[in-house]
Image 1 (cartoon, rainbow, N blue to C red):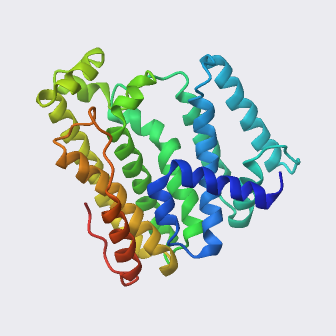
Image 2 (image 1 turned 60 degrees about the vertical axis):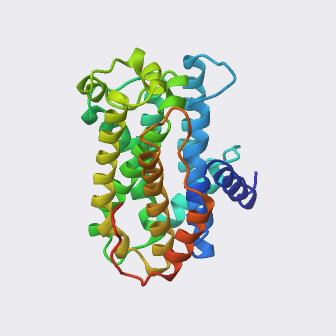
Image 3 (image 1 turned 30 degrees about the vertical axis):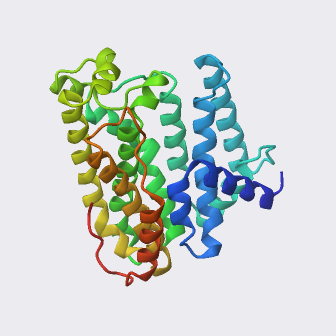
Length: 294
């Protein structure tokens, strides 16, 4: 597959599976968009190998992931690879001289999804999220550009944590269907919950599950607060995109809260009217102005 076709495939993956992030990406300068699509494509393709819906056992999915990782490493070494996603990813990595260790960390976390079904503590979950989320923030930073890249690095990592924890909270029921629990087991125990009872208790509504989800929402909001100072440090042309993504993902927490912390009977989503209002407001915001934490 040629380079242009690879970038286009990444864009289509992004549009199909990452609606909120894709909308925000539309606010970037046109020349940066395809590079963001490439990173999304890299993450999404690995995720689809891990969560393959063809019934393949975990060992087969692990072998597919290793094989894909090997093709990626071969591409880094200059070998021409026959892959639909990797040409765009490798080109983006080269253009911005992205840290290869971030990609290796991401693939390690994806491999964990094939062997780890739950995380005892939040510290354990953070170790997983370091590779699955924080490194996405540091990969993105050279593409977005920054007047103070060293100062923007930690907020970028925090934004990765914030976005992924938001997804984990929203998708509790979906992850249970895949045999995984991303909310720390220590948090469940704190509210008198057992993993086997989580779905039943959640469908019953209120009670300890309400308290558990409220606790996790507050934890996610703390990551957003830590991420907020980094957005004004980005290149002016990149700020509308990340401002919008920040507010839209934070808006998912608002919807969960407004729904009484019920993440079982419906999947929280930001209404289209608000989505487009956020996008317009982000475009009009003065570069360098502070970002209000959700």
